[in-house]
Every structure is written in structure tokens, then in C-alpha cells.
Length: 413
Ligand code: ASP
Image (tube, rainbow, N blue to C red; front, side, top):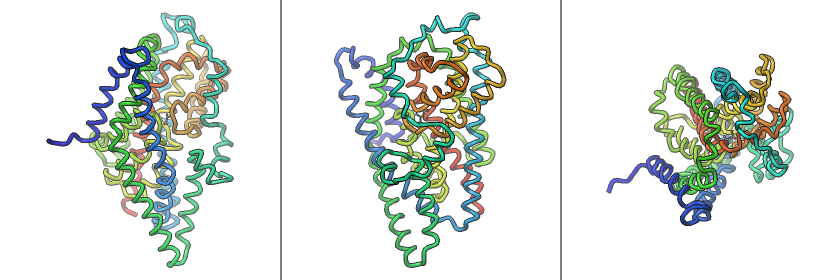
């Protein structure tokens, strides 16, 4: 019998998970939520288990293999430029659509009452905070962790990235003896981690089934209806960013056909979709772009950084959500205020962690910046999860395109 390709298996699991979640949730015919939870958690645990050693070994081997210091600075510059400009493009797309279609205004009146604004409880607020600080100076502080083991155990990626970059950089300065030992050691670890990644991916269909069925059983569809216009605008803006903006960049600079690339990256994108975590998806993102032909020295530098600081989908969502809430409250939104929203969305998208619902904390910061009460966040909580799945896939897509684009411009060096 012909084996079904893994991305199809994941897609089938995704489709099956919807009826399963609806019929076998807590209020369903039989309650299977415990089983869904087990399947999903096992998969997530396995992914998270790989992330720390994979990131460290990927960056160290990547950086230590870069030939010259000039090459290092050049690639870093290009990466940051790509990340900032695509995030900015994403925010602009969201901003234009949310201004055009004003989802927060229903029949000419601010939607606050129609949507029966659900205030947040203190518990909810507390669970949202702590998903990542986004004040600018805090980002810099996290880049230099006082204890790398603590950073690793807490999944504090930015600190690990800095340490690994510096570590890799100084391996290049060792004498030949030491250097060979170090390079062999880290290259070996990196290969082992890729091997484990392949193994974990084999259980991806089960994990996806569990994660999505659980989400469907918890969220259902009814509660989503009143927020449909907002959700639709987010979806359209995200799709525009994927199929127009980033695809154009990928095709024109990266010389890669977007459809072909999409197919290669489908596993990683489906995993991002079902885990809602770009950090947990990182192993598959690396594996995907490697299959697409991106050399290790590029992918191991661009992707771990991207999974942490480049979040186009998140930036776009933050902007649309904040504008939507402001509209729903009937706030007069001046140009200056929109500028604040854009800037804070850009900065916070860099600061938030690649974990589920991390955007929520950033939206609180934006709401505060434009003077709205953060309890307004309650408005969008209902649709947050499905939109989180989609924006995480967009985050991973943009990181992957970045790797392909930078690889194309680095091929001559
Ligand atoms: N879940 C997103 C990610 O991991 C972050 C967010 O937008 O909440 O990329």
C-alpha cells in the first residue's frame, strides 16, 4: 500500500479533529477531552524537548561556519532588514483593512453593546501577563541572561540566541586543535537533534488531532458568530500578507516559486497552525527550509532569530485587534494614535514569545498606550484561539521566506 505523505496525514487529522472535537467534547456524546489533551500534550512536550538543544547547536554550528566577520555582519543586517520590513508591511495591511471595513462599528454605532463586552476577571488578566514583557528596554535585558541554564529551562530564547551567537563566534577564533573538536562536537549534536525532529514529526498527525479537537471542544462555533467580521478581516489581511506581500518578496528576491515553497513548508505550517507556537514549530521550520535547499549557515542563523523576533502575523493581529477595540468603544482614532498603534505593534511583536496567545499581552500594552481599559481585551478572547493558529502559521511562513530570501542573496558569498 502506498504510504500517505506526512503533510496529508496532518491535514486529514486536522479535518477529522473538528467533528471529533464537536461530538466528543465535555458536552458531547462521550467525553474524550482527556484523550485529546494527552495526545496534544505529548506532541507539544516532544517538540519543546527538542527546541533548546536544537537552537543552541544550530546557531553555534551556523555561526562558526561563516567564513568572515564581514559575512556575519552582512547576514545579520539583511536578516534584521527583512524582519522589520515584512512586519511593517503586515501591520500596514491590517491597518488599511481595519480602517476600510471598520469591524468595530455595526450599523453605524460602536459595537460595544451588540458584542456584550465581557469584562476580564483578575484571574484572566494575571494569566495573560507574564507571557512576555514587551517594553523595549526589557527586550535588551533579556538578550543577556544572567544565567544561561535558567534561560534554557524557562525557554527564554532571546538570551540563548545571544549566548549561542557569541559562543559560535569565538569558536572561530580557537586554535585549529580546539576548533576541530568543538566543531565536530556541535555538528554532531545538531545532526542528532535533526534526527529526533524527524522522529517527533512522525507523531505529528496524532498530536494535531488532539490539539485541535481539544480547541474545538472548548471553543465551539456559537460564540464566534458576533465577532465574525473582525475575524474575517484578520484572516483576509493575513492571507494577503502570505499570498501577495511575502510571496512577491520570495519570488522577486528569493527567486523561489511561492506555491512550490508553500508545499515544501506545509508540514511546518500545519504544525504551527495546530500548536499555535512558533517556538515549538522551530525544529520543523528548520527541517522544511533545509529540504527547500536553504544552506545550514543561513537557516541556523535566520530561523531561531525569526521564531523569536519576527512575527508578522502577530504584529498584524495586534494592530487590527487594537483598532477594532478602539472602534467598538466609539473612540475617535486620530492619525497620531494610529501611528502609536503601528509602532507599538511593531515593537511588541518583537518582544512577545512564540507561545500560544502571547499576542494578548501585547494588545494590553497597545490599549494602554491609546488610553483604553485593558478589560476590553475580553471582546476578542472568544476568537483568539483560531486566529492564533492562523497568525502563528503566518509567523512561521514569514521566517521561512526570510531564510529563502537571505539564502538567495548570500549564494555568491
Ligand atoms: N502564538 C504566536 C506564536 O507563537 C504568538 C501570538 O501571536 O500569540 O507565534
